[in-house]
Each structure stands twice: as C-alpha cells, then as structure tokens.
Length: 342
Image (cartoon, rainbow, N blue to C red; front, side):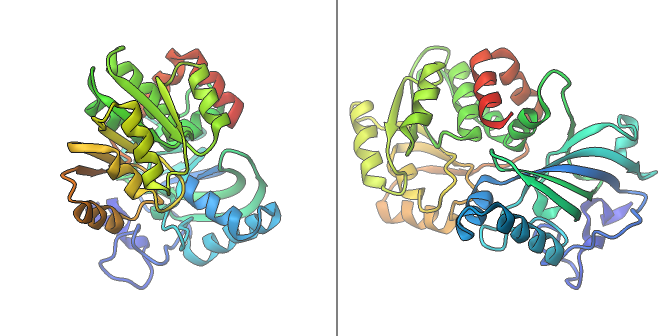
C-alpha cells in the first residue's frame, strides 16, 4: 500500500506535498484499492470557516452555496482559503477498496462520519441542497477517505445532525479529559458546540471541586449553559478584548487566574484573552481554527508569560466514544444540542 495510505497520490501538481497542505486534490473515480468511497449527504463546516463565508456574503444563503461550490470545484476539497479550515462529513459507504482496513468492520450502505478534516478529503459535489443552522450544509456528492483517515459509525440513538455536530469537535472534550483534574480553575472561551462539550467534560473531570468559568459574547448562550449546570460562573465579554476578559477572570478567581484556559472561539484575535487568563506555569489549549499560532507564541513571549500552549489535535484515542457518551449521559446537554443542531 505504501504512501497511498496518506493520500499523496491524490495531490495535483505538488510532488511530496501531503493532502492537507495541497492547493488541489483529485477527487476523480475510480478509487484505488486502499480507498473508501462515500456518498455524502451533509457537510459540517468548521465554525470559523462557516462564519467567514456567511460574513463575506452578508448571510445570503444562495451566495454561501456558491462560495462553497466554488471552493470545492477549484480545490477538490472543502478547504477555505481564508481561514485554512474545513470541517467533516456525513454519508454512506458506497465502495470499499480491497486493501482498505475498513473492510474488517464496514459494509456498503453503513452510515459514517469522517473524523478527519475536509481540508485533506477529496470531495466532489453534485448539488448543494440547503444551508442549515449549526454550520451544516446538506449536499449530494462523493468523497474519498484514505486508509489513514479516521471515521465513526453513526449512533442510532441520536439524531444524525446532532451526532455530526458533536463528532466534528470530538477531539476537544477528549483532550480536556486528559488535562483537567479536581480542584483546578478552568476557563472555556466560546459557548458553541466545542465549548459546550469541553465544559461538560471538565465538569465531570473536576468532580465538583474547583471553579469552571464559561465566557462568550452572547449572554443568551451563557444563560443556556448555566441553566443546565455546565459552569460555575460566566463572563459576558468579547474575547478579542483581552483586558476585559482578564479583569473578569481576576475577579472570579480572586487573583489566582486559571490553571487551564481552553479556546473554542470561532473568531480571530482571541489569543491574548486566553494567555492573559492563565497563571504562570499554567496551560492554554487552542481548539479554535481561527487561532493564529504565531500571535499566540509571540504574544505570550511579549507578555513574559510562562504558559504551556497546546494545539488541539482533532485526534485523541477514544474521542468519538467519549463525546457521544457525554450526550448520552447528560440529558440537559443532549437537549441543548438537539435545540441548536437538530
């Protein structure tokens, strides 16, 4: 199988470049023996990308469709050239290559979600049917998953749109489970789907000990989180205003600041709010695809802050199972997801 497992054979005109970095992928058929063909019916666009596209066209749904159609046609994948981010997809298995490892557990017709970015997934769209709330786009098309690409069978006890929304960010709560412990002071910036799941996992990991703070520009969104017990305190603030966030974190933590800050914001320029909120020797995790890692690194240096900074890897072993488990175990969280994304 060789390097085909990484999809390098699908890169057009850039020898040695991997699919995520490539300017264009080849989504043409037939598939090779090491590939999996998916009939796609829904895309979950990355929140930063969806927001940027919507703002670019003034929220006009038809123009959003055309923008997405153009990106996929020109690049052979859903890779927003402005944000650099993609998303993930939902569909049914159409064909399994004879050397693809999925032959051991998948059958044609199985409904699956990809757990790798659309920025490295060859994709061809026949139709964009509708733009839905919650960053989701109903489509008709085909995608190819490489042998190295992760996927998850869709659960049968959750609405597909809800499960897709959660699986899109399943690496976030799984990494929270690795780093949050009882007694910590934890801040989550952003009250979207990744923020909600991070709060839910942090709540479980803290076991009732410590301080869990949610921050967002929307007071209504924070009221929903407070209403189902996902946080101890809220900060209504624009996360691009680092000093405003710092003032409120300082007050809530009584000057000790946070052991851990988790950035799930879908807008750029929130790096300083994250770093300023963390105590010396603490940790910041950046899950947002709107993050400038140059701004984060140089910003921390400029502040003289000794903060360990982690890039939120979308893959953590067991991440899909953990995330779906959060929805199953927490009725309030599930209802909130169904209300926003179902």
